[in-house]
Length: 380
Image (cartoon, rainbow, N blue to C red; front, side, top):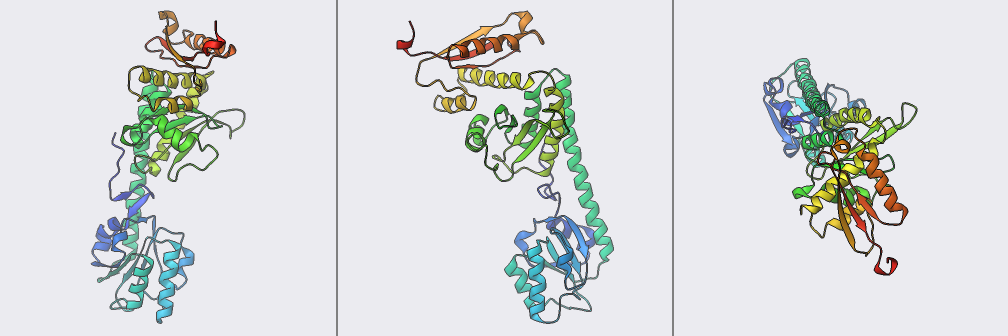
């Protein structure tokens, strides 16, 4: 499914743009003329309000398109400047003034202040029913919200089908990464990486993205525009957290629909992770993917050490030994005990001080390992 949204609907702010509002029949019939802020017509119109009182800015929350005939603007230049400035400071999307009994054209003071503050200012040359304009724009906004929900539900459906078809968490995260156009990560509540899906800018490996933006900055705020959604179920109580889904906006901005889709995916992952040791097995799959990519030449030699460190492998300067265990059919089958075997091997090697990066590839029946051998003086 294409994750792009119609340019007339601003998915960043969950509303329509000023430009789109002016193109709808209600305002278009008023012969709108843009006097200021022509370069800011992509602002989001979150809602529409009509009013004539001087202190109307105090009644607004920001993001509104304000309709007025100008009776609250004041008669003195100072009052008009203050009126526009307070609306700009409140963060409204645009000011639309209908010409008529109050103004046959807008005062220069009003226009100059709107230009100075960057507030889109529009005058209507014909009378329009404000009620009809309000209903029309609100309908457009609500329809846009519904379209976003439909997109998110489509992602939920695809994730569910992937699980029913025998897929697992990697497939769910991959679907979410494709939909958002950005890499997606699953991390533990304390910030340890479990799995990465998707790719970074120019096809960069997601582990590189994680290392640069997340892995070294666990205690810092995520990059602006990131989406972090908690996966419930880590313990007793309704507020417990099992894991976190992290979307980083490195290939393009993330929109509200991507958060909605991530929340739907989190509900699915919560059910999957309820199975015993799923986080550990998922991390092992991620290591298996890395080791396979490394063995097959899909990871550059200069990038491999940093990515291995992200996965917890820090062998020092000793020689490295790659090993692949092949599982029998019984172990490779779902529920065949391959995870128990892999965990036992990793624990045995760790107990004698051997750095090991162990992954699993259950579909192929393989357990790839990378061992950090002891120095020559420490072994017979």
